[in-house]
Length: 116
Image 1 (tube, rainbow, N blue to C red):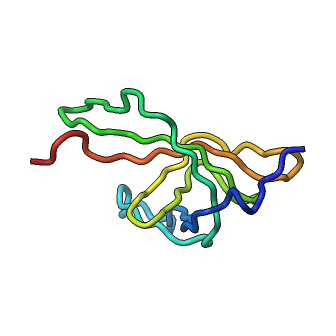
Image 2: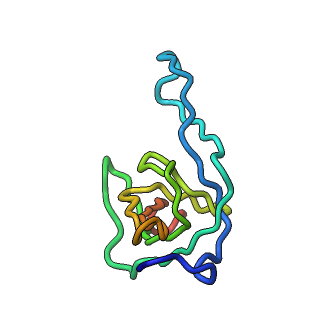
């Protein structure tokens, strides 16, 4: 049986969801609210051409695999915040074993290259 061990969870992060008040006049504005502070394990993927050019802007993406204790409220439209690193959930969550934990893929974005 696959379970998440406490020794794997070395980072305390903020689990956040997009706040919505149901009104249409503030469409496009993003405000995130705290769901809970949780402990996670992060395993960054090895670098491999993570830069993309869209609309004249080049961005670098960093993907990582995240494990946490099992929760039933984590969805793909949430994000994790570790200091200044903001990681959006891009796939998952997948259940490990029988409620042994969750595994998901996250991505954070930043401008690529020299900022000069």
